[in-house]
Image (cartoon, rainbow, N blue to C red; front, side, top):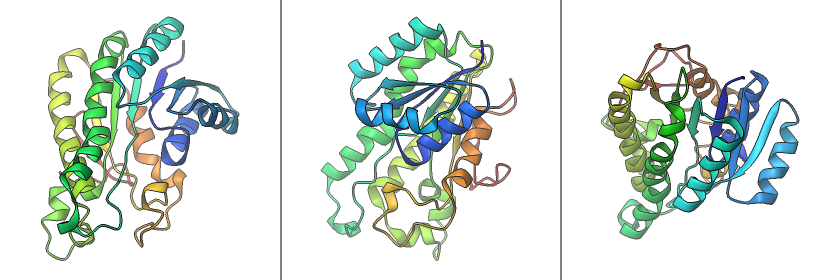
Amino acid sequence: MSDIALVTGANKGLGHEIARQLAERGMRVYLGARDETRGREAVAEIGTGDVRFVRLDVIDRESVEAAVREIDAESGRLDVLVNNAGVAGEIGTEVLDITADQLRATYEVNVLGVVTMISACVPLLRRSANGRIVNMSSRLGSLTALSEPDSRQRKRGALAYSSSKAALNVLTLVYAEALRADGIQVNAATPGRVPTDLNAATPWRGDRTLADGAVAPVHLATLPPATMTGTFRGPGIDESPGW
């Protein structure tokens, strides 16, 4: 059987492109989405390979557990988990006006949702001969970039989003060590400045394509066994933004 992959938040944007590229590489891809209609439309849009919709809301544990049971029943294991689902709820809000509720809502998806997904999927990933987890991060979560006084990341001031991605980077490192003995590789990727719904109303959209943005996560999702774990890869694959 070909590799089995699950991509969260995959009905549009970068997640959809990652799912498409993994399907093109011969994987059976479970396209995770909260809305069934949009999810099934997204599967039809890909139109190639073995792509299957699975209803999945990363902040709803029952939904996550049901999705994992469905994958288990159909495929018996999971080789790749791409934690792509994310939010950036504070867009357009000044830093000093951002509330704890906005941080809480952002962390619920970007951090706690990832913990929920990994916890639920580890039993299936342990059945793989080459388990891989890819966490979609951002340069906005890089302490290296944020510590530079004139950096674009620092000036953007995305308090909730940036801090949630910094927390995600910590999760990546800690899970990489915890799952090392299982042979499960855990890495983070940033797509670079790719136009998505998250940055639609900002001047930070960039001019890279979704296909460009998918290069690093797809590379990490297709690693051979025992290649790398606990790394943060930029759009150029070999480039590291620095934690």
